[in-house]
Length: 62
Image 1 (cartoon, rainbow, N blue to C red):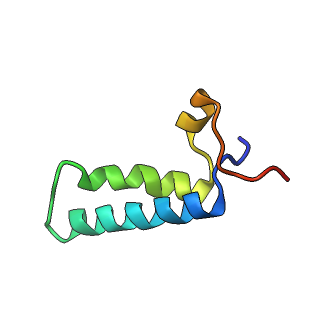
Image 2: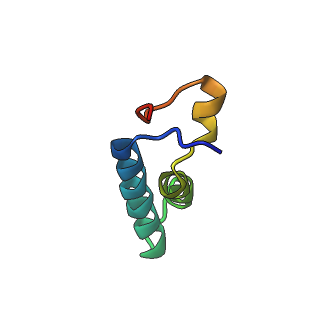
């Protein structure tokens, strides 16, 4: 699994994931709250399977 997310992309995913999970854990539940796990995990790992399928990458080439 090669990294395909850039630094800004990863940071945004982590923030969005944490905000959505915060809403879920504080009782402000919406159908989208628990979906926050997905951007959080992809942001931490630095790999997005959908980017691979679409042939995209926000990570600068080394």
